[in-house]
Image (cartoon, rainbow, N blue to C red; front, side, top):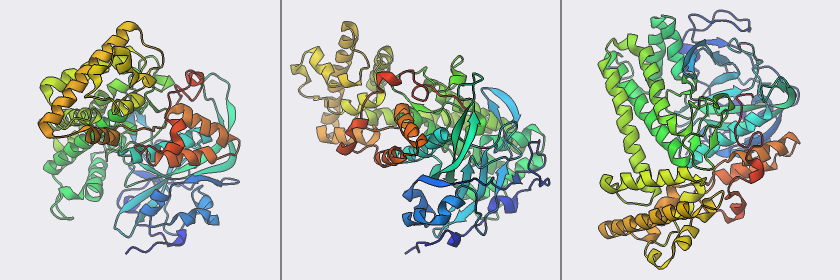
Amino acid sequence: MALVLSQLSQLQFDNRLVRELPADEEKQVFPRQVLGAAYSYVIPTPVKNPQLVCAAAEVAALLDLPDTIFDQDDFAQTFAGNKLLDGMQPHACCYGGHQFGNWAGQLGDGRAINLGEVLNQRGEHWTLQLKGAGLTPYSRTADGLAVLRSSVREFLCSEAMFHLGVPTTRALSLVATGEYVRRDMFYDGNPQMEPGAIVCRVAPSFTRFGNFEIFSARGDIALLKQLADFTIRTDFSHLLAQPSSVIDSSVYVQWFSEVCIRTAQLMAHWMRVGFVHGVMNTDNMSILGLTIDYGPYGWLEGYDLNWTPNTTDAQGRRYRYGNQPQIALWNLAQLANAIYPLINRVEPLQEALGQYRNEYERCAERDLTAKLGLSVYNPAQDEALGDQLFQILQSSEIDMTIFYRTLADLPVYDIHQYADPQVVDIVRDAYYAPPGMAAESAMASWLRSYAQRVQQDFVLTGSDENTRRARMNAVNPKYVLRNYMAQQAIDKAAQGDYSEVKTLLQLLRNPYEEQPQFQRYFAKRPEWARHKAGCSMLSCSS
């Protein structure tokens, strides 16, 4: 039985990245181009009055820590960056990236500082990273800090995604700094002072596509190979027969193929739950296939393939909901270009990109089948059934989350007894505005076709209504972190009331359960939130 630690000082650090990759020789922290190094040493900027806002017990358990650790005096001090534990080696990593389709050069951890890698008693490595802990060599013209509003959103969404079953970085803690940060939230020349905060993010690795792109772009192939080999040995060691096995071009190809497959699976999850990342730049793509960097994200309210939560992307909508799978493929192509010097053959890279397409299609078919409560995917029927549904959802303002959840209650055997309005009543709560006669007729027709398909499925598989409902409710969440919910928690937190942040964390731990005590959160976005700042679209400002 694993020993539960009683003090933060008992954490064991095994900082493989700083031990095995080259460091920046410049010790002074000022914005600059960092050459020939994977990271720079940097100390978090002390803050005046750190106060714990909220923490996740499940993430503490990954580090062998009990939730009672949150009450200890040094917890907030440590995860605000004021106190370093023995074994920590704070550093910020160098990476580049394509932003909105254009190469941006060096970016790097501009407001993220890795404290070190905790080695837990199960032999797992977990990197602790503070977001908003101060200036690094990669901060460019910024200050390296973060504000409370973006930090609340990052903390809650990290944990919400995990409990939805979506691969993601995690969040251990959210700490208010007791200081104010100057931010121009609307980029309109009217900056305001906002409360500052720091999130401690946790992941096996925070390595991004951009970590490889920067060295390839600079022609530093030796460092590119060193980083790739390190990544394979630490996070993809199953590709090696022995820890000391030689890593050659065939291993790089296997590695890239797995990155493609993991990324395809991640995109399918995003589409399944209606999540829109908002900033799918290559520097925001995890090499592990995790959701990383929660900026202006959002969940679909009314189903809309063209919706993006990012005000910066309002015109081009490059990162809109329906474009996410294609953008992920484009990003993978940039990664392929970056690692090409390690392989020197185009064909295997193209084949791996083909694997992405195949895996995404497989996952999308699987998820549609599960979301509709069917036992097996029948291409001859279900492709058309799905396409018709998506057209109907797109043509009216229909809440995706509520629609699928209420669809589970459709009486498929008794549907012939009801007139069209009564049939649509089953899912009517998902409509933001009453449908017209044509829209109502189209929905009723689809629901009848769907009921017929389900009955056929029952006959072929011996399934029943209860099984269908359970299957649907296991993949169609009842509760997601709607932007207006997060904003209400932020508004309270800005006044020093953290109760709503804690309530939402509790709610989002069980997104597929009924949770009758939280029924008020199973509701469409209120009309007042349609255009309110923070409740619809958001900026990258944090």
